[in-house]
Length: 345
Length: 200
Image (cartoon, rainbow over the protein chains, first blue to last red):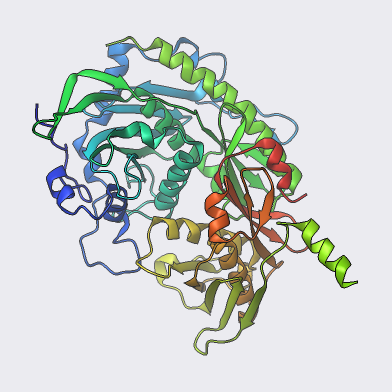
C-alpha cells in the first residue's frame, strides 16, 4: 500500500515527495520557518502564511461537539463540585486555587482526520491540538531519531489582541516553550519514532491552535499536547526489503509510548507578593509578571519559565514549585480518568 | 599566601566565572552601546531611545521597549524571538518607562561569538547598554548561567562543551538591590532538591 499522502499542503508544509528532494533541511526547521520567516526582520520576501487558513480546513467546532456526543467523553466528575465557569475559590494566603478539576475539560479525538487530537478547555481558554504523523528521512547526525515539531497558533479568531498575518511574538514564544517542554521532559523518546535507522522515521507535527483566549495559554497548550499525544495511533510501517519502499498498514495501529507526563502550572505575580494560579486574560494584563513551572510525575522540574516581570525572592519561587507539584497530581488524575472513559474503537 | 589562594580556587571548583569584561560607548550612532565578553562569548548591544514611535505601537502612559536579537549566522528564528521576549520583559521590569510616555526604546543585540552561556551574556550586555544610554532604571541586573553536570555538581558560566554534557542548564537574571530573581529559564530537567541552587 502506498504511503498515505500528506494531507493539506498549507503554507510552510509541502507534500512528502517535495520535502525529500530537499534532503538537507530538516522538517522541523522548515515547518518553523514557514511559520515565522516573514515575521523575522528579513522583510517580506514571501507572502506570510495565512494564520487562519489551517483553521478553516478542519471542521473543529462541529467535530468537537459531535465527538463528545458520539463518544460521551465528558468525565463524570468534571463538572463536579467546583463552579463550572464561575469564579474560582480563593485561599487566604495569597494563592488562588486554579479550580482544576471542575473547569478543565478534555475531549479526545475531536479531529477525525488527525492521527491524534485533543480539545482542552481551561475555564474559557479553549485550545485544540492536532497531531499529524508523516514519514521522513532522519537527520544525518541523529540517524535513529524521529522529529516532533510543535507549532502554537494564536489566530485572530481567539482574541482581538491578535491580528491575522505572520505569527506574533507571543505565538512564537509559546511555540518555543512547548518545544522546550517536549525536549526537557522527554515526553516521547525520539528513538521510538525511528522506523529504519538512517532511512525512515516518523515526524509528528503537533499543531496547537487557540480557539478562545482567556489567558494561561501555556498551561492549556501543554495539556492539549499531552492529551493529543496520548490519543495518537500510528499505523505500523515496514520496509519491503526487495523494493526498498515503505509499506504502511493502516489497519494495524499502535499508540505512542508516552514516557513522562509533564504538566505546566502558571502563576501571575502582583506587586511582588501576591501570586494567582491559572490567571485569566484580565488578570494577566494587570499582573506585573508571570511564572510557569513544568513538573512531571516523579516530581522533577522540567522547566521554570519566568520571562522577566517583577522580581521574586527565591523562597516564593520555591513555593511556586511546591504548588506546581501538588497541582500536577490533580491534573494527572483527570487525565487518567478521561483516558479510562474512552471507549475502544 | 599564593599557595593558599590556589587552594581556595581549587575548592570553589566549578563555582567561578570565566574572565569577563565590558566596554561601553564603542558605537557612535546609538544612544548607548556596550560589548560584554564572558570568556569567549561576546555580545554587542546598541540602544536607541527614548525615540519616536509609530502610531499603533505607542503606549499612552509609558515607553515601549523593543528588543531585537540577531544571531551570529542566519536569520533570526523562533528561538531568537523567544529570547527577545525574555529580554524585553526583563528590561521592562527595570526601566522606568513611565518617565518617557509615548516613546520607543529599541535594544539591538548582536551575537559576535558563542562559546556557551549566551543568554546570560545578552542579559549583561543589555544592562550595560541601558546604563550607557543613561536611561532611568529602578535597579541593575545581571545574568548568570548554571549547568548541572551528571554528577549533580553546579558549574557556573559553562562553556559550550560543559553545556552539552550537562543534564540541566538554568539561566537567571538577578536584580541588584535585594538579589531577587527577575528572570529564569531552564533547559533539561532536574529534581526539586537541586532547586536550592535558586538564589536565596
